[in-house]
Amino acid sequence: MVHGAPDNFEVQQKVTTFRLDDMAELAVRLGAVNSADRLGDVYFFDNFANGLGNWETIPAGTGSGISSSGSIFKHKSWSCKLIGGSALGNYAYITSRQSYSQPSKMGLEVNFSVNNNVEAIT
Image 1: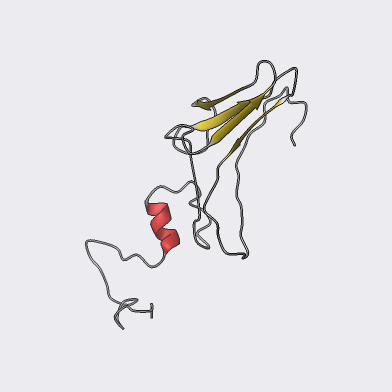
Image 2: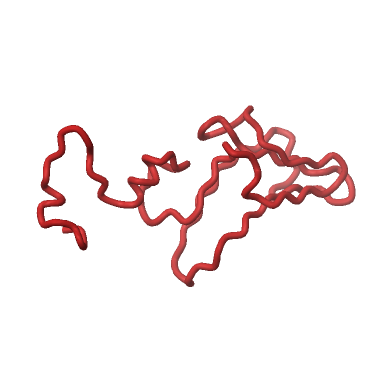
C-alpha cells in the first residue's frame, strides 16, 4: 500500500484513466529524456528543446562555439553542439548550477555523440 493512499489503491481497476504509482512514471509521462530506466528520483534533466537558457556557456579559443543544434539529437529534435577552438585554448563546455542537495548516492546519465575529427575529449 502506498503511504497515505486508500487500502484499495493498488488493486482498484480504472477504465478511462490510469493510476500513477511513482514519480519516475510521472517524469516519463511529462517527457523525460530517459524513459527506459525509471529507477530513482529525477533531480534535473534537459533536452535543449528550450535552448541553452539553463546553461552557462564557456567557449575558449579561436573558432570555438556553443549552440543549440537540430542536426544530431536523441530526444525531441534538439541537442547542444560544442565546437572547441583552435588557438588560445581549445575547448568549449557548458555547466548548469543546481541547488544544494544532501550528500547521498546519485547517478548521472549523459548522452553524447562524437564527430570524426575530434582530437581529445576531457
